[in-house]
Image (tube, rainbow, N blue to C red; front, side):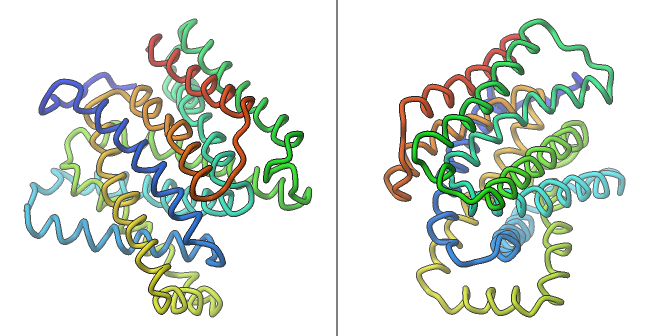
Length: 308
């Protein structure tokens, strides 16, 4: 990938931002899972993007950052938003509803290895021994978690085969979408203000999500029900503000000030932070095996960073 990284405002700015995004996403995913019961994945995704666009627009009006030097940046960042936020996040919410917060978050540990593979196939970027070892470690850990989750009496083991496989497919679509989005934003964010770049990604995603909501009466009715349920509204607005608005700003900052492999590796640590949260608030079962292989998956990502 392009090594021309923008100068950070202070040392490790990109790394700190990426790790902060991971912690915020762990909290917001737990809130989305808790307050999002009974609400379709598409409606949840539309709602969180509306909140993010409102917050980003307000911030841009206040701070008035410099506009991108070329319309090309709007198009490429917009495309990354449609892929990552419209398609990817809708699939992620669908997986959350079927597989639970812990398993879904762990499945996304394959994003950094996938990003490295896409960079190798698309850009000719070679993989070092450590990068290859880390990729195998992370993907193997996810496979082991899938196997043991069917045996230990957790949510995944109780699912009907149709629900299980649809959840796995959605988790895979989410991972592919996030991989493509990271590759697209890595270089194009270098010459764009973080607020502008994040809005350029979020606004098109919101517009795309609006179309089926307008045409689908069920989606429209669910959104109206959400707006009338004060408890759900407050909970999901809080999750959207921190997880989408703040989280995406931190992710964009990480992508701007450090290499793609590093930022995806650090943001992918959110399964570690989500395990205690989902156990406390969602009553999801924790097992030693699940903790072990989650740490193994994140450890594999760390190996990739070491060899980057």
